[in-house]
Length: 244
Image (tube, rainbow, N blue to C red):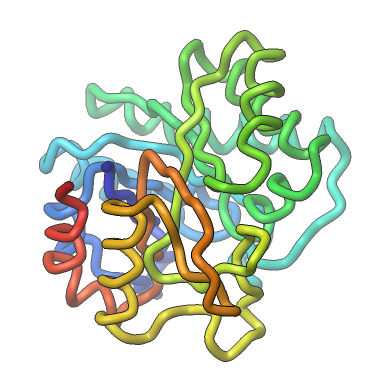
């Protein structure tokens, strides 16, 4: 089970997360590409940090929404979304190439991620952008929500590799989607909640939903959000729970 975290989300003098402390404990770094967070300097520094710790680098593109941290839905045309994703992935990859590395996967951020799991047209555009970006660029999608549909659309774009993702710090709805962040319990605040959720996903391939039901959930990677500063302090304990 791969451990991924949203990284490089600082902007100018404003600091988000604790990348230096977190990077040694993760397998995949989802690096912000400047639209919802980050800037070229922080992107460059985060790439260097990931390379230092042999962490796989992924692009984390989002809507052009710095003020809302990419968590507000936007109605972009297919062309606008397709080109904005290529633009963001290309910018990160250019900075990677300057350091002798490259982007190997893409995980959409925030509202874009949630919308693509609900709208086939948006998911299709995301997959098309990954296929156009480079061969074998994987796309991270939410596990347990239309898995077969995701595989079907990926095949239509030359077999884009998919990485199915679960979340250790988010509450799930009964249908497998994430509870809206407007709900007071949407984000787990205690390390005990997170550890119990990780153990359920890793050992039993299930997750406890908002109503207390056990829902099947088979994932390739587990995410801890980079802005969950309280839980980042416990990341070593969380990583230990990923062992089968």
